[in-house]
Length: 228
Image (cartoon, rainbow, N blue to C red; front, side):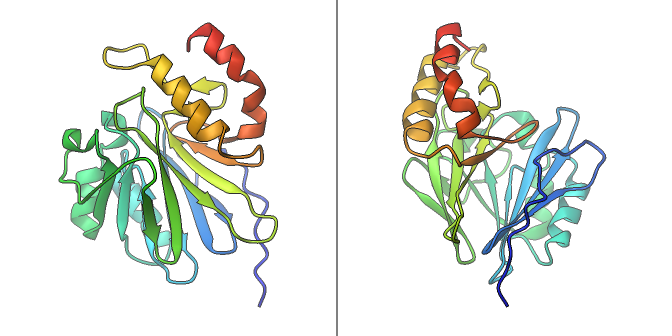
């Protein structure tokens, strides 16, 4: 049977609402808002194998474990996009409950509340079943912030990019605190995201609604000029 990707996904979820579900040919993406800071957690399920990967065990471990169960299986991997406390609040509980291996950017790994099994950087890959995600290191919001890029190979497919707090609709992530760098982040987002991926690329941020690179690209110069 030929699978027809679902096109009803909008990228908008609410604090108490259900997960948004996007069905691709080889991958199912579930988006859930958790915690008091409106964090997004994403569950990626390989359709061929049932393997599952969670992006950011941010908060509310019970709801995250329910999300994992809704995918139909256990949890193989948790990827943490960056070290900030609102993105790791449920990490220890989720890992303890599932036995999932942990992955994080090399320069943020030591700050996480659990040991990191795999430290990754620019050009590395992370797999979930038969699906491979490219790691994009985006320095500036934190030293080891990473994004994950999935190039959907299906006819008409496009790239799906999980950006953590490095890229949002309307700008890059916060760089106002000590140790952060706007210059570094805007440079990496420009050269490693906008210069690499096309306008059809759909990105999934750490908070709030999704967007596409095409919608944001016209504003890059504006972001650089304003400094945030």
